[in-house]
Length: 70
Image (tube, rainbow, N blue to C red):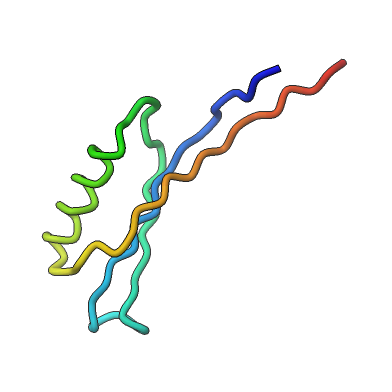
């Protein structure tokens, strides 16, 4: 039995002294299957530049279905 991918999202952590504790996280849903780490990093870098922040981390979150035996 194999897992079945049901959903993916990405959590970016942005660093800037304007945020409480200097950290703000943003979650983006519906990440397409097969996306590369470089593509996710590029999006995070672009978002941080638009916000005037530094990109601190990117975490890919996957939800996978567990098949159950009948």
